[in-house]
Amino acid sequence: MAVQDPEAWVKNVEKLYRANDAEAVSNLYTDDAITIFGSRLLSPEEVHAHPKEWFDSLLEYQIDRIFRAAKGDIIVSETVASYIKKSDGKRYREFGVDVYWVNDQGKIYHKHTSEIVEPYDLRPFPPRKP
Image (cartoon, rainbow, N blue to C red; front, side, top):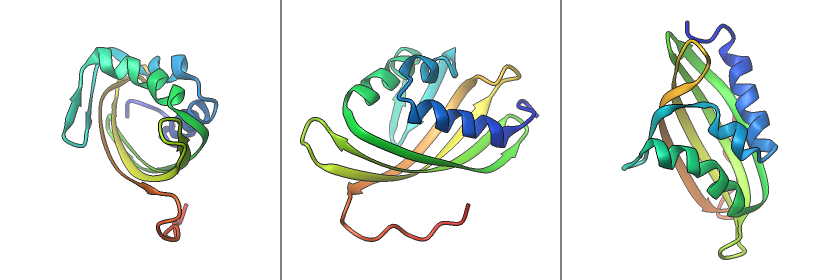
């Protein structure tokens, strides 16, 4: 397995996102990492720019990331988040799944992200089991 303790690795990712630490999040990725985000492919430059752009666009960011599975160099986590977008002043929530391909140094070299973003009060949060 590429990461000895994938559950701890996911907790570290959560910690960095909770801290809005764009530089540390960017450093989670290899220099040539790509991300498939829905139907969009992010280049390595976009991957490394995204954390700062993301954190700079939000207020009151809250996130929970739960380890779900790991095998070989793949780690899967589930995310529930809420935030206010600075662009419109509205609160949103997000439900997502991230699939990470991680090298032996614990760096992400490929990632797939799937998420749903909706107005915060559209419906109750679905029940989740940690």
